[in-house]
Image 1: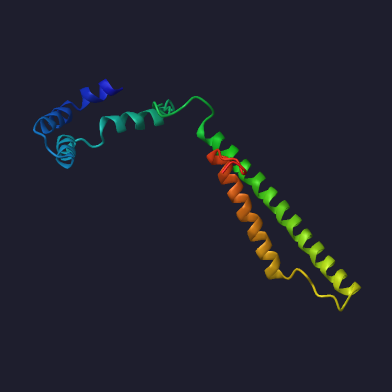
Image 2 (image 1 turned 45 degrees about the vertical axis):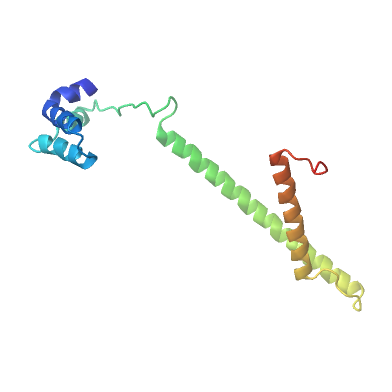
Length: 154
């Protein structure tokens, strides 16, 4: 197909090679091509593609960037399915989170009810500080694992 395009657009190719031989900038090279193609409407490649579409023989051209495998529409369906599965999993996790929060509230209420004079040890701020500390420790551990350092090998 490349040879066919070069044959059909010999004037544009010649204009481009002359512009390149003269060390013209990219913009001027493009202008040389466009100037040589100016009178063609539609371009032969576009006309052939339209003819194939009308005949029902149009086939998507393959490029070196395309890989073997299912067409993009099937890949899109797979991705959409994965997204739906992940959304369902996220909803499940959110439900579990709400259940755990409800259990924690229930436990807090039970501890206060069993001993109204007792001070609640874990308020929200303390819980948040504890979770932040756990998160930082987890991040440090993961960073150490990634860098190949062991926790005790400093």
